Image (tube, rainbow, N blue to C red):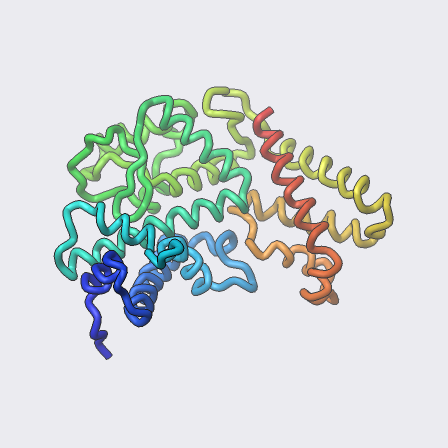
Length: 326
């Protein structure tokens, strides 16, 4: 059944703060459909990171757009109203309004996915920090294009044609990534010399490509400015060692867990490390311990182990980052 609402009409009502609940529901449903499609296809290869056994794609799609519908004490939809008012060219038709919603939803999903990757994967986080450093160092810019964050050479880049996508980044020649300080320059030059695409680099796709290369060669660059290489094996082993020492000092030696439980924890964290190397861990952190304790219910996990396990996981991530920064 065709909706009786127009996107432009609903956005105007929201901007003027005279909206009805049914209008808001209509816009939420529309935004959700965009968010779901965007997550399903743009991040289809990241299910391990983005999906847990108790978190489905529908729930993630809702979480990704939730910030767009935040209201202040007067009931004003702050972000939606501000974005609608500042959008250029000015929105004056239903077609323009639909395009606007599509773009701001895509931007919100990109931000959500990047934050989820940061939280679940310290290697992704470290590489992203290094790329952001290169962007600042070489005076490149980040720009939102068709809903995704791209690196561009200059804000004055006006001509936007076809854009490189994840597939393009994944198929780039490996030699473009050999010099850490020149990665962005090399990719820009390659795009201009070998394609008709706009010289723009999708940020999240680039980070994931670099991680794949570094993991496959089993080393990770220490920083964007330091050519020394740190073996992944050394990084994760040291981080695990420190985490296990902390587990002993805080829990095992104080009889808060027994030796059998400690062994299950150790195996769970080793599996987490395997997944970190292979793309990132699931937000359903509990599943790693439940795999080692099949008789354990989720309710008992929450009561008995959740605080301990999540605390030790924070230690593990912190130590991985510390090792990468040393």
